[in-house]
Amino acid sequence: MDELVTGIKIFAGDASLALNLYYYIPAAFCRIVYPEPEYSNEIVLAKSGKTIRTHSLADDKIFKVVMEESSKSYARDNTADKIVSILVHSAEFDALNKALHAGSSLQDLGFSPSVYNL
Image (cartoon, rainbow, N blue to C red):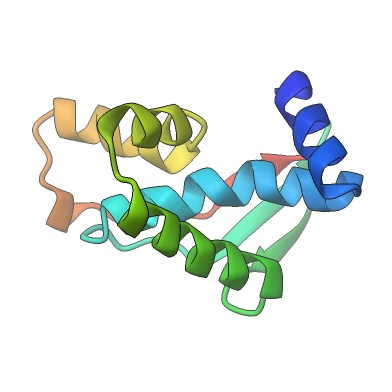
């Protein structure tokens, strides 16, 4: 994770933005590729295993832009290799994948807020 966040930080020029992008891009792609489950509109921000606060994605301007740009990117290039390389960083995709392998259907899935460690 550190190497990827560092690369994003160099590109974005801001550590906080880099961390947001690291978490938000995979979450956005999961929601775009698999729209059927009910996703939480909140995330939990934690440090050292303790909740700092909850955060509303519906009110987050960065998340909204990431969703828009990820949708455009997916429409332009949705090759399996590209999508999987992004989705493997998503906690929601990991949970979704485990549920599907256990026999659940996409329409029956609902997610609690993801926990993002700072």
